[in-house]
Amino acid sequence: MNGTTTFKSILILGILLISAESFSQETADTSAKFGNTVAEQDQNSILTDNTTDDLNLYKKPKPTPPWFVRRFKLTAGVFFPVNNTKIEVGNRDGSFGTEIDFEDDLGFKKSTTTFLGNFQWRASRRSRFDLGFFHLDRNTSKQLQKTIEFGDHTYPVNATVSSYFKVDIYQFSYGYAFFLGPKYELGLQLGIHTLSTGVGINLIGETAGVGYNDKFDFTAPLPDIGIWGGYAFTDKLALNGNVNYFSIKINDIDGKIVSYNLSMMYQVIPDLSLALGYTGMNFTVDVLKTRTEGFLKWGYNGPTITASYAFGKRKPFETRQ
Image (tube, rainbow, N blue to C red; front, side, top):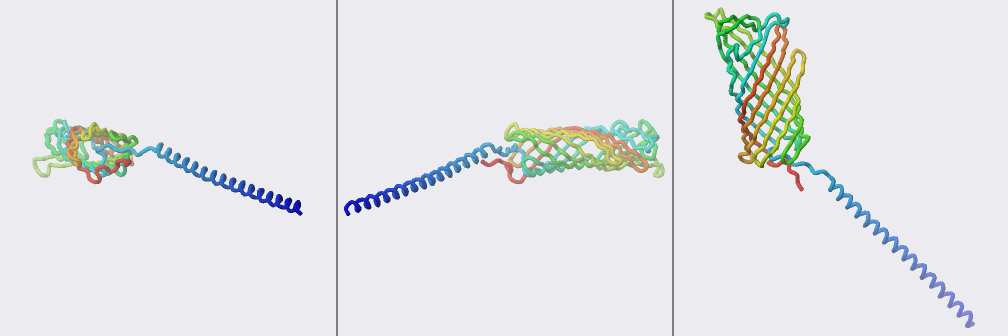
């Protein structure tokens, strides 16, 4: 009896020990798995944070443009061009018409004074739109030193004639800065110059019935492509410029344009700048009409004095840290 009881007691104790060991092992395994899961999550979180930091580290920040780049800018000024103008208007077969030098043959002054204006919208830190206007109105009278043929008439030597040359130039362009930094910008420009031109000669006769006149008017849209840029020497002094060129034939208009501009800008107060520049343009336009053909070669260049008023946010494209 005592032996049987002792055996049962030992058996029960063994079962309890095995169960306890089994439970301890399962608990240890569960704790280990849980610990591994937490460690893996922490490691993944660290890797994710490191990856995000690396992406932010290698992400290229947006460049800050120079101080003279503003959202809106209105420019107006005075231009002192020196002109060289030649024209020929005759019949389409070329048998009638004389090449006329406006300055030498008709007595136009080479130097004139006129107005110019420009409005610029900076759509983004790299994109800009420009709308410009230029007007020139020249009149003169002279006693001819040679016989000329213009339009439908012949103007004889020693005859007194009055002449005019009027032109309005509308310029629209889009520019994109491929290179941009706190002190500089450099980009390409696509645009169009539209010339609205009128030329006329009037023979001044001694009596009303003797006089006659001819005129030649045309409008020529001339697209162009160019390079533009600017550089800030200091926080108030900057240099800006552009060069444009194109040659095209559209229907009855064959034209070529070359233009350039260079100016030194000084910021007087935060929204107002003054600039001293030098600008020039050369046009060659051949126009066919129903009965006549006209050829105009006109070039001008000279100094400019302009004032620019900028409005909108003063630093619209400043990079925020």
